[in-house]
Image (cartoon, rainbow, N blue to C red; front, side, top):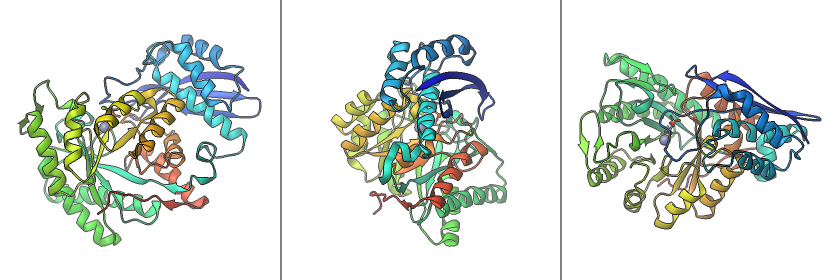
Length: 401
Ligand code: PGA
Ligand code: ZN
């Protein structure tokens, strides 16, 4: 039974205030911190000012104290009812997700189980591949690429450790290449390199780094992108550093990139309301097409996408929807319809490692949590621990040709 719920304000990787929730039962406790986005979708659960902590703590405690900690669905229902809005604008998606995840961790702790074991059971035995952000711009860094994230997927790795090592080597090799070319590169919000280069230059530089690392590790590494196209869309065109594209031009441009660079993964290639454009692209390519701002981990939007074939992959960000139950429902509807899932961090993160466990519990194809920086490494090292301590194999990526 939940005996107490309290919050404290802590800081995230951007140095911004966020909320940590602690859920206490008679024999255990659980703790979780809400992350936060910079290129947030307009249909996400809304974050409320952390300094409203006193008022919200009182409301959430009243709603949760006395509930059975193993009844996650009841806990999440109580959070929804206390909030009373569609998008958690009253108690805040940030306050809600921290409580929801803290409750699950308290339940797992009281059974002496790891969170992934509690949520995934005896058959959660596959690790996702790390989808690593290595060059970035958009809303995550000024004066860099227009495409928000250039990603790597070490598809040939046989262990999670080797996979993360490959991503880290690419990140390191990129620094060397930038230096050699005399290009100044800083780090963006997620630790990816930010430089004054065009997207085409980023693809070329990344290809060079990947070839080098492939030789070193002896397996294949593929590229992907998060276009985060809502950030480029001005209502009429997609506006890049060096070009302006209409909707149709954008669709063919992305298809060309997939072909030219053999991309395995494309996230948000079109703005968040263009379900039809997504469907047009998805039909014409052999590539993971993933909805982030499009779906916002929301069952209704995922169902709408499934109906017209808007994508084949769903990005799963628990704080976009506000509870673990709703996150699970999003995963379920995606999987029931043969969509892949990718569990994801936010650009504003903390040392909280919960999503590492969710990626195993939900059998995600990929986990998107960066490559370097303590708040990213917290998740990656947790997966290395899980691999080391428990019997695990790497999941199968069905998109490889
Ligand atoms: P955000 O970006 O966390 O800043 O929203 C990440 C993403 O777009 O995937
Ligand atoms: Zn995204």
